[in-house]
Length: 144
Length: 298
Ligand code: SF4
Image (cartoon, rainbow over all chains, first blue to last red):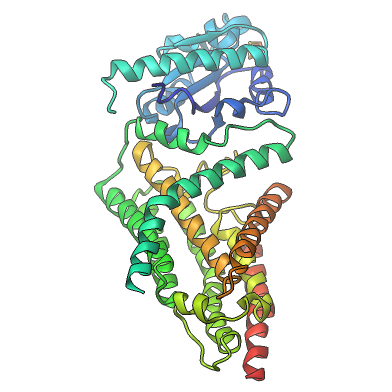
């Protein structure tokens, strides 16, 4: 039975995004989209989170932060890159400080394209991430 | 008597998590509706706990584990004593011990957010504790009237079986005071300083920041136990030896819980000075004056 699928808790981190995608992530919580319908909670605590939602690309300053947050999340966990910037650097790709997409430092499981990614696309991405979460739990041997 | 005591305790220990979880689910649903959202399913809190159990636990140190378990055990013990019909003073003292273990658990982690949450939890305790004690005293003074014998009692079983009318009739002020500090105990806005169920992130998740996986699940379940116990105290204000007091008590509990949710959704978190000041003022005005008048009359 799906043990994790019904309660995905997110932690949202704003990399070097233009804030466009962040606003769309927050829009998901509003009454129009209401992700809490699916049990999604936007928690600020990596230790409670299952899905790491990153917007914007990785630069030399936030690389350590992103890695730190990821290491503080208990297994099983998934990384979801939201927006084209998080996928591969997007319009900021050639900037001197940008390392690239999130997958340059973390194993990304779900890519949500778009500039900005639309709330429906983000919700889709989260639902996909939940599926992967479940697979990871099974692979781990599932404690229960 | 003995049988009733054991039955009360067993029923509480077995069913409180289900009632508490359902209440939490209803709470989230009503909150969502108040905000114009559809909201999660009623069973969502159970899904959350099941999820948490299936996650890894990142333990900071073994003390954390020990204190978290002590918190759980003492919370369950509090409720069991209460539903077993024991002395209400004893019940409240055990509750304070439980709260202390929760604070200790957070302080051992050495994490700044967790410790900040623990400090705020202590201030919360400081704010609600006088009213909690006054509630016990209130029952003692009130039962002298409601039982018609002129002798007060602290025993939960006797408060119910010997009162001829609901104690709330002579304790309206104490009831209001207790309902006021219930906002702190339920961790609802405006007094959810040490930890909040909402997406406030000013200090991450406060006192629960360093809890993960199964430990977090454990703490969630013990909060359900605690909520069911607290609603039991609300019911105690209404219960007496008449049959109609039972549906009335359920009604009063439902109204109290609904008002708590309403307050939660219509107010923002306040500073600790504010919480402290207001809860002590309310305690003084409503609690102390109520008991004082009763004493004068007796
Ligand atoms: S994908 Fe577009 S909207 Fe999103 S962070 Fe990048 S530039 Fe901004």
